[in-house]
Length: 153
Image (tube, rainbow, N blue to C red):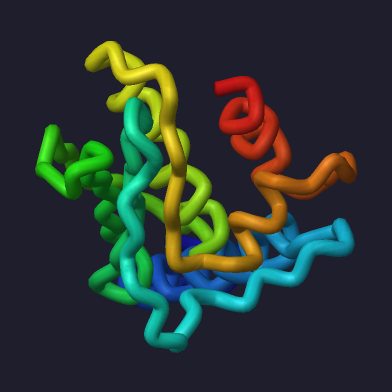
C-alpha cells in the first residue's frame, strides 16, 4: 500500500482508520439539545409494583469490549410483582450510552406490545434518558428519531 510515496503496514492503516472513525462518532453523536445525560442513578430507590391492570417493563443496557458489543434487555412484571416475560438482544457497533439506553427502551416497549400488553409503565435507571422521553421539547440530536418512536409507543 502506497500513499504519497510512503508505504504503511496494514495494522497501522487499520489503527488510523479506527481513530478517524472514533473521532467521527464523537463529533456526529454529540448531543445538540438541552438534555444532559447523567447516567444511571446511584440512589437506593426500591422497585414499586405498577397499579392493578398495568405492567411494568424494566429496561437496561450493558457494554463490553470498549463499547463495541452491547446488550439490551427488558423484564415485564405485573401488579403482583410476578414475572411475565423477558427479552434480550445483542447490538454490535459504536453507539453512545444514551443511544443504547434509548434502544433498550424501544426494544423493550416493542417486545411488550408484541406480547399484547397495553397499559405499560416504563422504568429505567438512566434519569437523563427518561427525562428526554418525557419532555415535550423537540430534540435535534442523533437519537431524536428513537425518542420520537418511543413517545409514539
